[in-house]
Length: 112
Image (cartoon, rainbow, N blue to C red):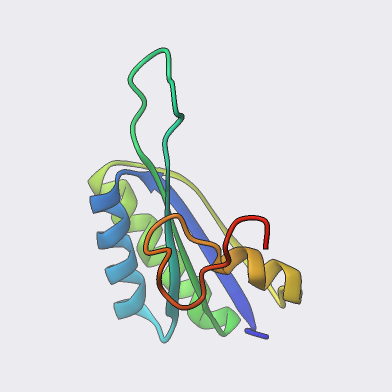
């Protein structure tokens, strides 16, 4: 079980890639997933929402989340950020769910 999981939500996939890069460079964390979401039939144009998830020690995740949040604000805008210290096994499984790169190790198929 990791010491902490960090979650940073922002607008756009490019911002997510830049945020993940900033997080990985700021501290010793592992990027465990990048998720994207857009409503199937929005009434108005909706920007793509992306989430970068990372894990590591509490102090490393804290530094990485701050770096990722700063980068997201510079690119398109931060929606929210959160750190979960000592996640349960079930929380860890949910964090590994990913809407991007589903064929990669760590992805949990829907209804698994």
